[in-house]
Length: 141
Image (cartoon, rainbow, N blue to C red; front, top):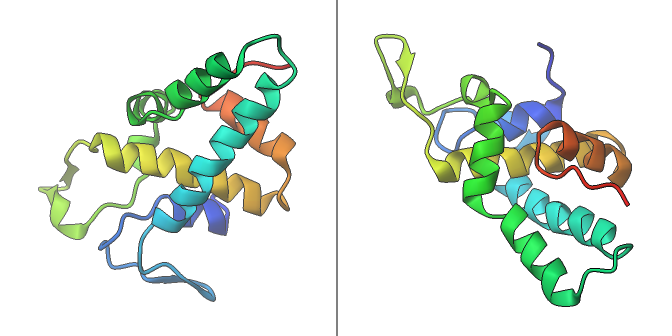
Protein backbone atom coordinates (compact mmCIF):
# COMPACT_ATOMS: atom_id res chain seq x y z
CA UNK A 1 0.00 0.00 0.00
CA UNK A 2 1.39 3.40 -0.98
CA UNK A 3 0.76 6.38 1.30
CA UNK A 4 0.86 10.07 0.47
CA UNK A 5 2.99 12.35 2.64
CA UNK A 6 -0.14 13.54 4.45
CA UNK A 7 -1.42 10.02 5.06
CA UNK A 8 2.00 8.96 6.29
CA UNK A 9 1.99 11.86 8.77
CA UNK A 10 -1.51 10.88 9.91
CA UNK A 11 -0.21 7.45 10.92
CA UNK A 12 2.56 8.81 13.18
CA UNK A 13 2.16 8.67 16.96
CA UNK A 14 3.88 11.33 19.04
CA UNK A 15 7.17 10.06 20.45
CA UNK A 16 7.76 7.34 17.86
CA UNK A 17 11.05 8.89 16.73
CA UNK A 18 9.72 10.44 13.50
CA UNK A 19 9.97 14.23 13.82
CA UNK A 20 10.05 15.37 10.20
CA UNK A 21 8.62 14.29 6.85
CA UNK A 22 10.26 16.19 4.03
CA UNK A 23 10.09 19.85 4.99
CA UNK A 24 7.20 19.34 7.44
CA UNK A 25 8.00 19.19 11.16
CA UNK A 26 5.83 16.61 12.94
CA UNK A 27 7.24 16.71 16.46
CA UNK A 28 3.69 16.27 17.76
CA UNK A 29 2.91 13.15 15.72
CA UNK A 30 -0.51 13.31 14.06
CA UNK A 31 -2.02 15.73 16.61
CA UNK A 32 -2.03 18.81 14.35
CA UNK A 33 -3.74 16.89 11.58
CA UNK A 34 -6.20 15.38 14.07
CA UNK A 35 -7.29 18.84 15.20
CA UNK A 36 -7.95 19.88 11.61
CA UNK A 37 -9.68 16.55 10.90
CA UNK A 38 -12.01 17.02 13.86
CA UNK A 39 -13.18 20.32 12.42
CA UNK A 40 -13.53 18.87 8.92
CA UNK A 41 -15.66 15.98 10.18
CA UNK A 42 -18.11 18.43 11.72
CA UNK A 43 -18.05 20.64 8.62
CA UNK A 44 -18.92 17.76 6.28
CA UNK A 45 -21.65 16.39 8.55
CA UNK A 46 -23.25 19.79 9.10
CA UNK A 47 -22.96 20.70 5.43
CA UNK A 48 -24.93 17.57 4.52
CA UNK A 49 -27.33 18.14 7.45
CA UNK A 50 -28.12 21.66 6.22
CA UNK A 51 -29.99 20.18 3.23
CA UNK A 52 -32.28 18.09 5.42
CA UNK A 53 -35.40 18.89 7.38
CA UNK A 54 -33.66 17.93 10.61
CA UNK A 55 -33.73 20.45 13.46
CA UNK A 56 -30.66 22.31 14.73
CA UNK A 57 -30.74 20.10 17.80
CA UNK A 58 -30.72 16.97 15.63
CA UNK A 59 -27.86 18.37 13.54
CA UNK A 60 -25.85 19.11 16.67
CA UNK A 61 -26.54 15.65 18.08
CA UNK A 62 -25.59 13.99 14.79
CA UNK A 63 -22.29 15.89 14.55
CA UNK A 64 -21.55 15.17 18.21
CA UNK A 65 -22.29 11.45 17.86
CA UNK A 66 -20.26 11.01 14.67
CA UNK A 67 -17.32 12.90 16.18
CA UNK A 68 -17.19 10.82 19.38
CA UNK A 69 -13.94 9.00 20.02
CA UNK A 70 -15.82 5.71 20.40
CA UNK A 71 -17.37 6.06 16.92
CA UNK A 72 -14.08 7.10 15.33
CA UNK A 73 -12.26 4.23 17.05
CA UNK A 74 -14.79 1.68 15.81
CA UNK A 75 -14.52 2.96 12.23
CA UNK A 76 -10.72 2.93 12.41
CA UNK A 77 -10.61 -0.67 13.60
CA UNK A 78 -13.16 -1.77 10.99
CA UNK A 79 -11.04 -0.10 8.30
CA UNK A 80 -7.96 -2.03 9.47
CA UNK A 81 -5.96 1.03 10.49
CA UNK A 82 -4.47 -0.58 13.61
CA UNK A 83 -1.77 -2.37 11.61
CA UNK A 84 -0.81 0.83 9.76
CA UNK A 85 -0.15 3.08 12.77
CA UNK A 86 3.52 3.84 13.49
CA UNK A 87 3.78 3.28 17.25
CA UNK A 88 6.31 4.26 19.84
CA UNK A 89 9.26 1.89 19.56
CA UNK A 90 8.77 0.83 23.19
CA UNK A 91 5.25 -0.42 22.49
CA UNK A 92 6.52 -3.45 20.64
CA UNK A 93 7.47 -6.67 22.31
CA UNK A 94 8.83 -9.66 20.45
CA UNK A 95 7.75 -8.05 17.18
CA UNK A 96 4.10 -7.79 18.22
CA UNK A 97 2.32 -4.50 18.69
CA UNK A 98 -0.03 -3.88 21.57
CA UNK A 99 -3.60 -2.85 20.89
CA UNK A 100 -4.27 0.77 20.02
CA UNK A 101 -6.04 2.95 22.58
CA UNK A 102 -9.33 4.65 21.74
CA UNK A 103 -7.67 8.08 21.73
CA UNK A 104 -4.81 7.01 19.45
CA UNK A 105 -7.23 5.43 16.96
CA UNK A 106 -9.67 8.35 16.99
CA UNK A 107 -6.81 10.84 16.52
CA UNK A 108 -5.51 8.74 13.63
CA UNK A 109 -8.91 8.68 11.91
CA UNK A 110 -9.27 12.45 12.34
CA UNK A 111 -5.72 12.95 11.05
CA UNK A 112 -6.44 10.84 7.96
CA UNK A 113 -9.49 12.99 7.20
CA UNK A 114 -7.27 16.09 7.34
CA UNK A 115 -4.55 14.43 5.26
CA UNK A 116 -7.07 13.64 2.54
CA UNK A 117 -8.28 17.23 2.64
CA UNK A 118 -4.76 18.62 2.25
CA UNK A 119 -3.57 16.02 -0.28
CA UNK A 120 -6.67 16.63 -2.44
CA UNK A 121 -6.01 20.37 -2.69
CA UNK A 122 -8.59 21.09 0.03
CA UNK A 123 -11.40 19.33 -1.82
CA UNK A 124 -14.32 18.76 0.57
CA UNK A 125 -15.95 16.32 -1.85
CA UNK A 126 -12.86 14.10 -1.62
CA UNK A 127 -13.10 14.28 2.17
CA UNK A 128 -16.78 13.33 2.11
CA UNK A 129 -16.01 10.36 -0.16
CA UNK A 130 -13.19 9.24 2.15
CA UNK A 131 -15.43 9.58 5.21
CA UNK A 132 -17.97 7.32 3.53
CA UNK A 133 -15.20 4.85 2.68
CA UNK A 134 -14.05 4.79 6.30
CA UNK A 135 -17.63 4.22 7.45
CA UNK A 136 -17.68 7.53 9.31
CA UNK A 137 -20.70 8.97 7.59
CA UNK A 138 -22.73 7.70 4.68
CA UNK A 139 -25.44 10.31 4.25
CA UNK A 140 -25.67 12.10 0.91
CA UNK A 141 -28.02 15.04 0.57
